[in-house]
Image (cartoon, rainbow, N blue to C red; front, side, top):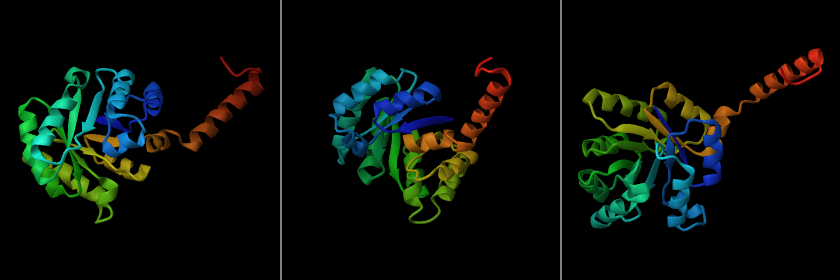
Length: 221
């Protein structure tokens, strides 16, 4: 199971990687523009903060077939292509481009998925990952249930594509998909912190320390 951080904030990435086994980072054009930095700087910083065993997943901006192919090649040379995945939206031009990009030896994540049917065609086009927008799908129905259905459909047909669930509003959505066995997931830093930082844990630790100090006059062994 792969767990990615959905951000271009290198400080947040560094912080989370200090105590969590993060598998890599996903970005998109909006995330990069919000960083206030040039894309080249963002990618350079990601290469510095991540190890070569952690994936960098970056999205094309072009919307036409030739442009997508050109940008996929440009992204693929980041970090000499080591663990680089190119995100391509599931538009008509994107679906056309996915098999061509794969033929170049470049890994692909199909993104902008709002329905299991779109994901099906991306999987059939040989995408490595499929990124359904869970919370946005909830605006049109039960997004969590549709992603669970998608995972089962891929297994039924023997597709190798992995669902990489994305676009979450809260921890409960993440929890439900983890419990359902989603093979990969990408989550914003604030939600990841909420998954880890339960107030009950802090209370328990404070009680342990207080009891120990009361009995032995110190806060260590």
